Length: 525
Image 1: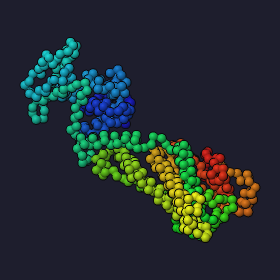
Image 2 (image 1 turned 180 degrees about the vertical axis):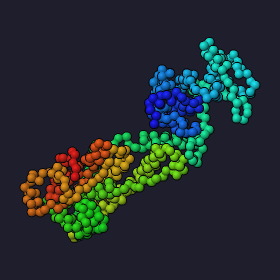
Image 3 (image 1 turned 60 degrees about the horizontal axis):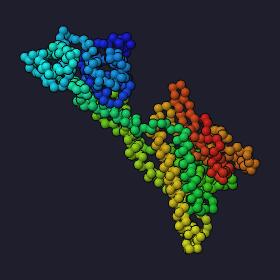
Image 4 (image 1 turned 30 degrees about the vertical axis):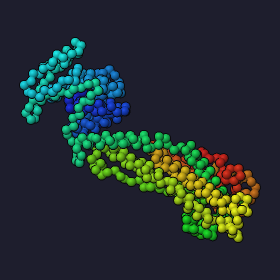
């Protein structure tokens, strides 16, 4: 890598071909959005390697930066202002450039800028070199003298075909320098050089589009988590209350567990098998200080945690075309940019539209689980009641139950959809330094339960109950954790604490069944 001194010395030793590529690149950059000097140097470095041979002898990034600064000093402006005003300043800058020549004769193939764009090319070897009409040199005296001397100094170069060639470009203030791309980049490629450069530019544009339009501009913080969890818990509370009205039951039972119920309960109470699930659920359902509605809420919260947060939203495919990967060898950041674009497009166009249907399926599964846990009232199920609708003060059993059932379906579907959208938010957020995860606590795990629930000494009855009954269950709502992986500091902490509902503590009347006194603060297992 060149030192600062070497880069400064090499910045002045540029060939005419290299300067031509530099000017053409600045033309293209001036038409786009402003960017940093490092980005400009990277782009020019790529253009030099792609258009000139041999690539390894082209100026480095640091030499390009020094060259741009040198041109800025000659123009008496800052480098950024030079790039921004390149269209207006390129003529004066090119006139001040002193290019080293490889032979006594200059190799320039372009005429100096004329005051009018009406000049035509002369390709005859016998044409006078100073053939310039007076009308074409009109203008003020100083401009005419300078351009006349430049016309006098124009030379004719012998082309490989044997004919004398003299080129001229009609330029206005907004006309771009002609891009000369005649050589292929080093290495094998299936694309023409012009296509190669176009693909590179397209990939860079795709990268910028992904960063500014697909990814979220802000990371997930405690505000996002709090809003999401408040909505989830509100929908769960409304839905479970509606289920208890639509499917009235006398008690909860662990004797009719379906395979889906067992799997969900195993994640909820961390039991190993069906017998373990039944034993724990019997203790939970037999708790005299725990309402049945709160127990069902715990199941609903466990379902949201296990299905919506911990399940995969879909495997991100690697859809970067093989031809593109081969043709842009040597530019790994562009391959990565295309892969990121494919992944974000997959999440946005495939996963996001599927979330409402997925939430509806989760709601149906949870309804089946709830039905397997309830013991219907004798002698008849209200859904099959033969009592005529006219005798019911509420307008009929069936219509009333149907209304509650609809409320349950809508509320739980919204709870799952909110969780899935929040999970998608996490998936599409740039997590270069922070990683978010959802965790459950196992019953009996080593964590500070008092910091997450109401103090047990507040009630004598509960203390007496726990004294004769060992604490078996901890029913949990999901908790979001953030892992910060900074170079000098790696640690985990809560974004939102788990809302813990301990066995034997019924606080449904005041706090909706969930203690909310101490949610926040650092806490690790």
